[in-house]
Amino acid sequence: MTGSRVVAVGHYQPDRVLTNAELATIVDTSDEWIRSRVGIETRRIAADDETVDDMAARAAEKALANAGLAATDIDYVAVATCTAIDRSPNMAARVAARLGMTTPAAIDVNTACSGFTHALATADHAIRAGAASKALVIGSEKLTDFTDWSDRSTCVLVGDGAGAVVLTAADEPEVGPVTWGSVPEMANAVRIEGRPGTFGQEGQAVFRWATTELPRIGRLVCERSGIAPEDLAGIVLHQANLRIIEPLAARLGATNAVVARDVVESGNTSAASIPIALSKLVERREVPAGAPVLLFGFGGGLSYAGLVIRCP
Image (cartoon, rainbow, N blue to C red; front, side, top):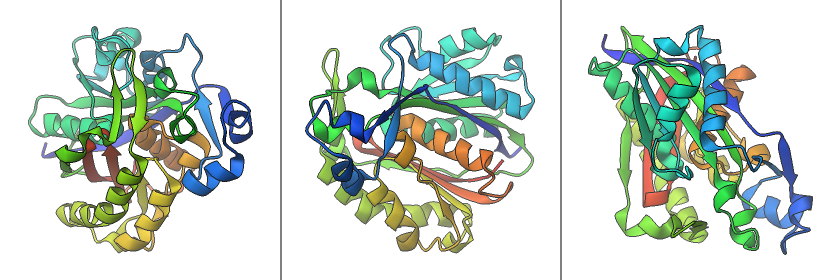
């Protein structure tokens, strides 16, 4: 086999919906203030006893069911997260145990908001190298565990949830190649530091970087994949801010692409945002099967990773 392909997706979000109006009762903000700055209307909040691996396993079960595969078929599982409370066992090992996998490689990836696309690339590389044949890649976050609910600049952003994809070996590559990197001098622009740790960010710095650099890097991702931007059928960015997401397609030249805007209803779910948004696009059949979709994650580190896949 010379590559991999995404054969199925799935996502899970907690039941509780937190509206802007409810947030305005606990912090100095308003629905208009939030919508005008980040475009978020609602977000999902996990229960106190709902963990990162709980949500990851639920999203994984849906992806496996959609793929028609059993958990025992998987030989590589990666969980992208920056909000796991426990250091060991890692989330991938816990998901593998929950689902009854047998002997998979079990790896966690922590590059914060770009974690899912980093994890997807590593799974693709493992399959290309012959080290795996069927992989499960999950993004799962419980950002609310690390949120200062008195800080209106960050608490209005966050949501919880998980998304997953299943990859299999393919005769022709339908994933990648990845374009990834980082901006080390901006490593503290998005952070969860200390014990127990609180989410913080330099929002304006990240906004400036994203709006100036993302179009250039996005075009490079397309070029390396042999896809012209105008031939993209979908764009799924990390769901950080609608004011970043909406202008990108125009600046990229992706005139025919459906642009995922899940941030409006889900908020910023860090490494979970891309697979959740992708799963919803597929579920609603907004992008045809086999059509090219740009996935691009960016955030803490400041790290980024982008690749083009064929829609399952």
